[in-house]
Image (cartoon, rainbow, N blue to C red; front, side, top):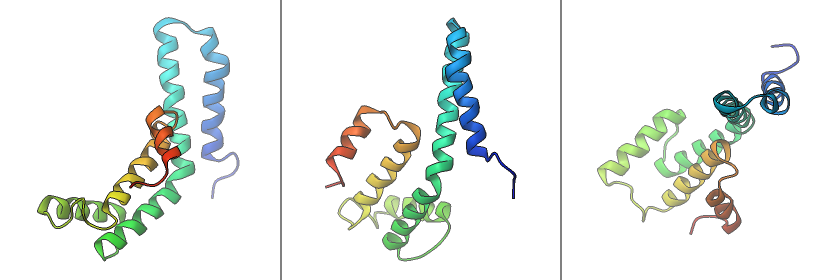
Length: 127
Protein backbone atom coordinates (compact mmCIF):
# COMPACT_ATOMS: atom_id res chain seq x y z
CA UNK A 1 0.00 0.00 0.00
CA UNK A 2 2.79 2.44 0.87
CA UNK A 3 5.79 3.25 -1.26
CA UNK A 4 9.35 2.59 -0.18
CA UNK A 5 10.87 3.02 2.32
CA UNK A 6 8.72 0.99 4.68
CA UNK A 7 8.08 1.96 8.29
CA UNK A 8 10.76 -0.39 9.62
CA UNK A 9 13.34 1.11 7.26
CA UNK A 10 12.42 4.64 8.32
CA UNK A 11 12.70 3.70 11.99
CA UNK A 12 16.07 2.07 11.42
CA UNK A 13 17.37 5.14 9.59
CA UNK A 14 16.30 7.50 12.38
CA UNK A 15 17.70 5.19 15.07
CA UNK A 16 20.99 4.87 13.19
CA UNK A 17 21.26 8.65 12.78
CA UNK A 18 20.63 9.26 16.47
CA UNK A 19 22.99 6.50 17.55
CA UNK A 20 25.88 7.15 15.17
CA UNK A 21 25.70 10.89 14.45
CA UNK A 22 23.72 12.75 17.06
CA UNK A 23 24.69 10.89 20.26
CA UNK A 24 28.45 11.39 19.88
CA UNK A 25 27.85 15.16 19.66
CA UNK A 26 25.60 15.28 22.72
CA UNK A 27 26.37 15.22 26.42
CA UNK A 28 24.69 15.16 29.78
CA UNK A 29 20.92 15.11 30.06
CA UNK A 30 20.41 15.54 26.32
CA UNK A 31 22.63 12.55 25.54
CA UNK A 32 20.69 10.47 28.07
CA UNK A 33 17.38 11.34 26.42
CA UNK A 34 18.83 10.57 23.00
CA UNK A 35 19.88 7.10 24.28
CA UNK A 36 16.33 6.58 25.59
CA UNK A 37 14.99 7.56 22.15
CA UNK A 38 17.38 5.15 20.42
CA UNK A 39 16.22 2.34 22.72
CA UNK A 40 12.55 3.17 22.10
CA UNK A 41 13.06 3.11 18.34
CA UNK A 42 14.87 -0.23 18.58
CA UNK A 43 11.94 -1.68 20.53
CA UNK A 44 9.48 -0.52 17.87
CA UNK A 45 11.71 -2.03 15.17
CA UNK A 46 11.70 -5.39 16.96
CA UNK A 47 7.92 -5.20 17.47
CA UNK A 48 7.34 -4.67 13.77
CA UNK A 49 9.71 -7.52 12.92
CA UNK A 50 8.66 -10.09 15.51
CA UNK A 51 5.05 -9.38 16.50
CA UNK A 52 3.25 -11.23 13.69
CA UNK A 53 4.97 -14.57 14.35
CA UNK A 54 4.92 -14.15 18.13
CA UNK A 55 1.23 -13.28 18.21
CA UNK A 56 0.35 -16.18 15.91
CA UNK A 57 2.25 -18.61 18.16
CA UNK A 58 0.61 -17.16 21.28
CA UNK A 59 -2.85 -17.45 19.72
CA UNK A 60 -2.17 -21.07 18.76
CA UNK A 61 -1.06 -21.93 22.30
CA UNK A 62 -4.08 -20.17 23.80
CA UNK A 63 -6.48 -21.99 21.47
CA UNK A 64 -4.96 -25.30 22.57
CA UNK A 65 -5.10 -24.36 26.27
CA UNK A 66 -8.61 -22.93 26.24
CA UNK A 67 -10.18 -25.21 23.66
CA UNK A 68 -11.62 -22.31 21.70
CA UNK A 69 -10.56 -19.70 19.20
CA UNK A 70 -10.80 -15.93 19.48
CA UNK A 71 -8.81 -12.76 19.10
CA UNK A 72 -5.69 -12.49 21.21
CA UNK A 73 -7.08 -9.98 23.72
CA UNK A 74 -10.22 -12.06 24.32
CA UNK A 75 -8.15 -15.22 24.66
CA UNK A 76 -5.82 -13.60 27.20
CA UNK A 77 -8.74 -12.26 29.23
CA UNK A 78 -10.26 -15.75 29.26
CA UNK A 79 -6.93 -17.26 30.33
CA UNK A 80 -6.73 -14.79 33.23
CA UNK A 81 -10.34 -15.47 34.20
CA UNK A 82 -9.75 -19.23 34.30
CA UNK A 83 -6.55 -18.85 36.33
CA UNK A 84 -8.31 -16.57 38.83
CA UNK A 85 -11.21 -19.03 39.07
CA UNK A 86 -8.81 -21.91 39.72
CA UNK A 87 -9.84 -23.72 36.54
CA UNK A 88 -6.22 -23.57 35.33
CA UNK A 89 -3.11 -23.81 37.48
CA UNK A 90 0.57 -24.76 37.28
CA UNK A 91 -0.42 -28.43 36.90
CA UNK A 92 -2.50 -27.71 33.77
CA UNK A 93 -0.74 -29.28 30.78
CA UNK A 94 0.77 -26.60 28.59
CA UNK A 95 0.09 -23.62 30.87
CA UNK A 96 3.60 -23.18 32.26
CA UNK A 97 5.07 -23.62 28.79
CA UNK A 98 2.67 -21.05 27.36
CA UNK A 99 3.47 -18.50 30.05
CA UNK A 100 7.20 -19.10 29.64
CA UNK A 101 7.12 -18.79 25.85
CA UNK A 102 4.99 -15.63 26.10
CA UNK A 103 7.45 -14.11 28.58
CA UNK A 104 10.42 -14.95 26.36
CA UNK A 105 8.67 -13.43 23.34
CA UNK A 106 8.08 -10.20 25.26
CA UNK A 107 11.71 -10.08 26.40
CA UNK A 108 12.90 -10.68 22.84
CA UNK A 109 11.29 -7.36 21.94
CA UNK A 110 11.77 -5.33 25.12
CA UNK A 111 15.14 -6.51 26.49
CA UNK A 112 16.92 -8.92 24.12
CA UNK A 113 20.29 -8.25 25.78
CA UNK A 114 18.98 -8.95 29.30
CA UNK A 115 21.34 -11.49 30.87
CA UNK A 116 18.60 -13.65 32.40
CA UNK A 117 16.81 -13.77 29.03
CA UNK A 118 20.02 -14.96 27.34
CA UNK A 119 20.50 -17.66 29.98
CA UNK A 120 16.88 -18.77 29.58
CA UNK A 121 17.34 -19.10 25.83
CA UNK A 122 20.48 -21.16 26.36
CA UNK A 123 18.63 -23.50 28.78
CA UNK A 124 15.85 -24.18 26.30
CA UNK A 125 12.13 -24.85 26.89
CA UNK A 126 10.52 -24.53 30.31
CA UNK A 127 10.65 -27.61 32.46
